[in-house]
Amino acid sequence: MAVTEFSAAINQLAAERGVSPEAVIEGVKQALAAAYRKDCGASEEEEVDVDLNMQTGEAKILKDGTDVTPSGFGRIAAQTAKQVILQTIREEEKQAIRTEFEKKEGTIVSGYVFRVDKGVVYVDLGRTQGIMPPSEIIQGEQYKTGQRVKALVREVKEGTRGPEIILSRVDPRLVKELFALEVPEISQGIVEIESIAREAGRRTKIAVSSSDEKIDPVGSCVGQRGVRVQAVTRELGEEKVDIIPYSADEATFVASSLSPAKVLGVKLKKKSQTAQVEVPEDQLSLAIGKDGQNVRLAAKLTGWRIDIKGAGAVFAEGTKGIELVGLGLTPRVVNILTGTGIETPKDLKEKNMEELSEIKGLGPKALKELEKVLSSFGLKKAEGEAEAEQADKEKVESVKEEQEPQEEEKPAEESQEETEAKAKDKEDMKTESEPGKETKGQEKEEPKD
Picture (tube, rainbow, N blue to C red):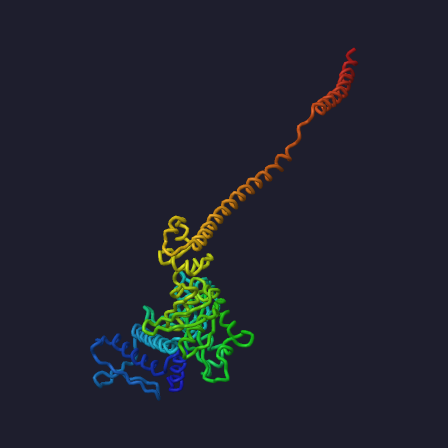
């Protein structure tokens, strides 16, 4: 083989598999050594060297410094050489993929859904496939074969068949990378995302800062008429994103993190890493958020344990008494109830007024509030029963309406006069037909006379 053809073949094979030409040449040397051992019966312990001349493309097999190159190899030896070359190139290809995606950890890759099997989504990334397990999929998202998807390279693991690329759409870094794609100021290093807290599929809070005083970090991320942040939310399945300004002052940062609620004051306790926040009573539910989501994300974003104080009641990161606040009870009453283990409407339904009146701290006004709430539970139950009874009545009426047309379709019974008239008509027709028969009979009898 001429050197030009040999080099071209090596370079072409290396380019197709994404490996270096040196790796292919090493594979060829190992293949020739394996073919010699197979054909000549040499053991694995015997040292066999291969000298491959890149100028001429000729190969020499040396054993203990002696040239033992055979004139040719048999079919089995040639097949063994082929398998060794393919195996060597395959291993180099896996190593190249592993190295490539290890550098891409924490970045976004784009691909197409190859298949979905038992909740696991396999994504075609070109040279390899990425794996997105159910725990890394946003709740409620559905994937179809051929669908384009963006995901974060979370990690590269060694699997049984080579490297496994684990993808994620719930990792908080995905939001950061999506903003980097949409906001040029972030890629330029002017605007920086300082911290991020996320509950995938529901809500995300990010804190941003700017190294240039003339550039508003929040406005840069929102974009004109919100086009930049809307592009991110669309990619995340309409997940809500709150963008707040970062502040080096911890009290200011904690107050901003509870946005959109207005904060009256923040008191920091650095020993316990606790921030006690005071908000107006009408802002209490807004500061806590649905199921405590707002204050929980604020705590993750700032790294402080947040206690919200409103009208004398303290809610630690919104974990207790949130649903009771939604019933219209005052924070003071909710605080007393949670202290006795009543934390949800279900717990409250199981109590009667006698049991509630025995709780210390509940005065006549508080008991009146609770009585009103308990009566609303009973009213809702009565309304539900009334609705069920009304539905049953409507069902019975609809059945009757379906039966009535069937009864109308039955033919009406004939009156006695109509019956007699029909009978008389039949007799007249019979009488008219009988004389004709007699005449015919007489005509037959006349010749006999």
